[in-house]
Image (cartoon, rainbow, N blue to C red; front, side, top):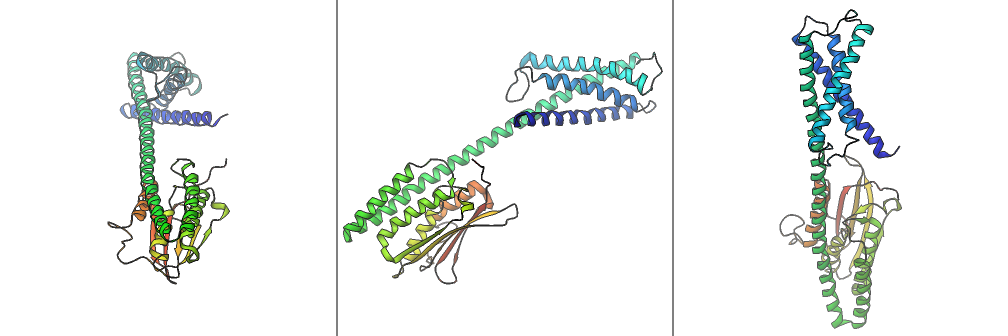
Length: 362
C-alpha cells in the first residue's frame, strides 16, 4: 500500500468518525424534542442512515471525476450523487434499522413499523442532515485546497524574494573584489594576475552552481574557501583563516552566499585596518532551541573590530549585514537571528542562528 493510499484511507476514516458524531448529535436533538420515546431507536436509525449516506457519497466520489478545488464532482453529477446518497442511505438505513430495532434490540414488537408522521419526520431529518453534512465536507475540502494554494503562493513569494536578495548580493561582492583587484594592478601586477586567475575560477564555480534558493552547508564552506583564497592573494601573510565544518552538518540546507557578507565585513572592518592583519575562523555547530535544535554558524576575527560609525542593526547598517538579516527573516521569521558582538580577546564575533532542518536521505 502506497503512502498516498494510506493517507486516503485515514482521511476516509476521519470523515466517517465525523459522520458518526454528527448522527449522534442529530439523534440526541431528536430525543430532546420527543422525550416520551426511548433514546435507542433514534440512535440506531440516525447512525445507520448516516453510515449508508456517507458510504454512497464519500466513496462514490472516488468513481466520478472530481474538481481539484473541492474534491467533489462538478455540475449535475455532484447534485445527483448527493441526492442518490440521501435517498439510498435513507432506504437502506431504515430497512436495516427496522430489523435491528424489532428483532435484535426489541425496541418494537414484531410486525410494527414507523407511523406516517414518524416517517415524514425521519425523511425530513435525513434530507436536512444529508444536505448539511454534504455542504460541510464540500466546504472543508475547498478550504483545505485554498489553504494549500495560499501556502504554495507564500512559498513562491519567499523564493522570489530570496532570489532578489541574492541577485543584489552577487554584484556587491563582485564590485568589492574588482575594487581590490584594481588596487593590486597598480602596486603588484604579479599578484594582481594571480588574483584575477583565482577570481575567474571562483566566478566559474559560483555561476555554474545550482540556482536554487538553498544549497548544502558544505557548498557554502567551499565557496567561502575560494573567496578567502582570493582575498589571501591580496593580503598575503596578513590574513589567515580556519574553516571548521563537522561532517554531520555538511548536508544541512542554507541560503547561498549567506556567510560571505560576514567574512567581507571581518576583512574590511577587522583585518584591513590592522597593520598586522589577523585570523578569521568560521565554525558551524548546533545547540538546543525552544522548538528543536538550532544551527549556529560563527564568523570570528582577531582584527580591529567594527568601527563605532557602522551600525550593526537598523537603518544605516552595512549592505551585507542588511542582506543577511533580510534573508534569515524571509526563511525563518523571528527564529533566524544575526548577532555581532565584540570578542573578549579583540576583534568581532558574528553569529548566525536559525532552526536546523532535517536532511532527507538521498
